[in-house]
Length: 339
Image (cartoon, rainbow, N blue to C red; front, side, top):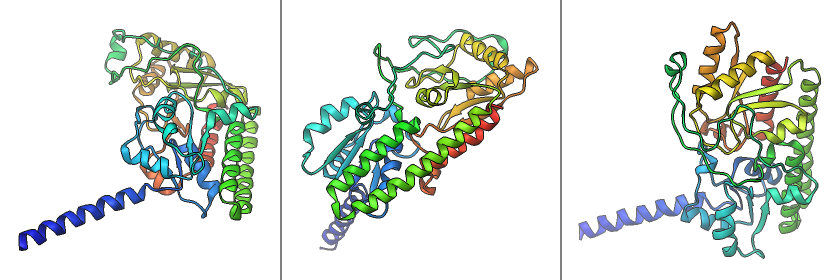
């Protein structure tokens, strides 16, 4: 009898634990990535709970939904996804057919931008980038000592659009407007609050936009160099900047050939760049190699992080760091890189 009661207690505790975990994911607004999550959170305010399917620190392009994630999406009031390579296929094949659109409002961020006059661009190959079918070349003695890891990249279809649309503030404001309209439609009693929250957040974005324009206007250097992949095509086009990078935006490679590294070193020297960028949640092996090689040529450079907002670290997520916060950090880095 005691054993039976003990077993029942253990099973009951497990059920409570599982129920609690599931409940934690029952958000009213769900986004596949950080940008959509941040926009929704700032528009919804205290009226709606918001969740992000990506775990903080997780790579966007490696994500696939769990059963509980699918249930959370289907039970949500608003579901926000990018509509690009990282989530389009599984969302449109596995999720959308299961969603009751009378109950759940679906927002495809790329479609919003396209339908409202925003900018969408096909992916570009950075000048110094690794070919997508690259195999690592043997490195010279000075480079071989650096720890550069191997990792295969994604294959891309020709003419594929860059999905990192939120790095244009113009596009971000269109997405925020769409979220506010969706919330006002499903919750008309709080429509005024959503509009006010939207306007307040857009005002912050406008301030960021003006500050970036001021930095670029006064810049003596107009090129950003990334020893990393480059998911910032929308950003540089919005502000008229040039760029070079080791990989395209969705390439998951971490290994760069001698040729690519040497091209980036030459670009640093020819543009008189002061900063080599990496993106958040990325390793700095290639950047460290370039920095070291530049130093041997008499050129000192710093390594800085440029935040692309595809996801955030666990600590930044806990702190509630926002898109605006990250853009302001980027501005401080731009002041060093462009002057």
